[in-house]
Each structure stands twice: as C-alpha cells, then as structure tokens.
Image 1 (cartoon, rainbow over the protein chains, first blue to last red):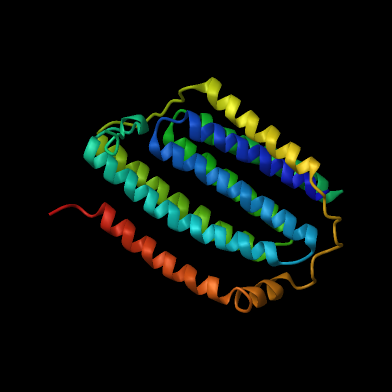
Image 2 (image 1 turned 90 degrees about the vertical axis):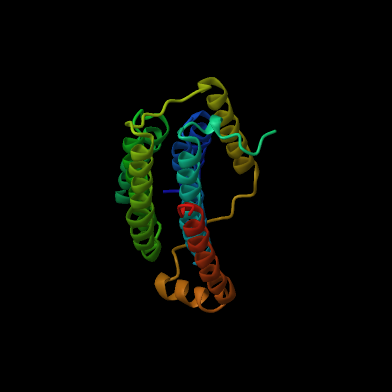
Amino acid sequence: MPISAYSILAFLIFSIGVFGVITRRNMIGILLSLELMLNSVNLNLVALSRAHGHANGQVFAFFAIAITVAEVAVGLSIAILMFRIKKVVDADKFDLMKW
Amino acid sequence: MGERIAFYVLSIFLVIGALGVVISKSLFRSALFLALALFITAGFYLLLNAEVLAAVQILLYTGGVITLLVFAIMLTGKLTGRFITHTNRGIFPGLLAGLVVFITLISFFSGSYMIPEKGPMTPNVTFALSNLLFGRYMLAFETLSVLLVAAIIGALTLSRKEE
C-alpha cells in the first residue's frame, strides 16, 4: 500500500473532525471531534515515519498522544465546571468572557 | 495483498467511526464511535510497523480517554438532570469548511515533493524508538512529565467544588 493512501485517509478523517467541531452544539461533542482530528494527525505522522523507514515520526506521535491525554483532562474539567455554573450543555451559551 | 485488504477493511471502519462521532444524536453513542475509531487507528499502527504505539494507543486512548469522556458525559447528564442529546447546527458551513480543509490538504500534498519510500522499517522498531526517546528526545520526554503533572493539578483545581 503506498504511503499516500494512509495520508489521504488521515486528511479525510481530519476534515470530518473539522465538520464536527463547527457543527456540534454540545461542548463535549466538540471535544470528541477534536480528538478525531488529533488522532488523524498521529496516523499521518506514523505513516510518514514508515515512509522514511525511521522511528523519528513515531516519537512525535508518542508525544502527541501524551499531550492529548493532558488536553482531554483539562478540557473535560472545564466542561464540567461550565455545566455547573451555567446549567446548560450548549457551547453557544458559554459567554462569560464576552462583554 | 494482505496489507491491501487489511487497509481497505480498516479504513471503511475508521470512516464509519469518524462519521458516527460527528453525526450521532446521542452523546454516549458518539463516545463509543470515537472508541471504535481510536481502536481501528491502533490497527493501522500495527500495519505501519508501530507496535509500541499501537499498545500505547489502546491503553491511553481506548482505556483512559474514553473512560474519562464517559465519566464526564455521565456527570453532566446527572448535573443537568436529563438525558443528553446533541444536535448539529449550521450543517452547510460545516460541510463547506470540511471540504475546503480537505481540498487544501490534498492540493498541498499532491503539489509537494513526495519522498520516495525508503524500503522497510529498521528491523527492530521498538529498540530504535526507545533509543530515540531516551536519547535524543530525553529532555522533551522529561518535560512531558512536568506537563502531565501541571494538567492533573489544573484539572483538579478547576473541577473542585468551591467552599
């Protein structure tokens, strides 16, 4: 299988993630779509690492996975905090920093 | 031949999972579709000679992140007192943005210089990966642990109930 096939698949998943981030109303739904986008980037990194025949790209994918976990932890706690303050699940209603 | 079949089967499931994440009505079902997509990605890692990353993907993502997400969904469902459904708004701008991103990526990709594939991977990928991780990228690896501690403290501080 040529490496470009993996890359094109990763681009497709990334675009689906962009669609989700823009159209979802729920904040956790937006986070889920964001996970999809990050995951597609990792797939691309690993595919290009395979193309180079070198493990360098896999190291970057490794770091990206670890950073994603930190991002999810902080993002979800912000989501829960917002739900507790505003009692809504709609991201459009979160306008605390707007004046 | 086997790799080709595996690629097509896995990519069909990956696209199904991804579409399920963005268009499913129930938030819980979205999270399960995301688990499917992440699990299939681990299969792709196996196809691409990244065994360690496949294991890390299953342990951290499918084990950790999905559990966290399901926890958050349950908690917010309990806080709002009703079952969470989520809908999409602005389908047309979303489709437009997704399409534009896809076309841009493809055109950049096809216009760029494609590196020729340099044969198979180095025979012992795990050894090479650990050598890089604890050799050249040692500082970044240690910084990552500081970042994780910061994230844990931040998450605890944010979600703590005010006295």
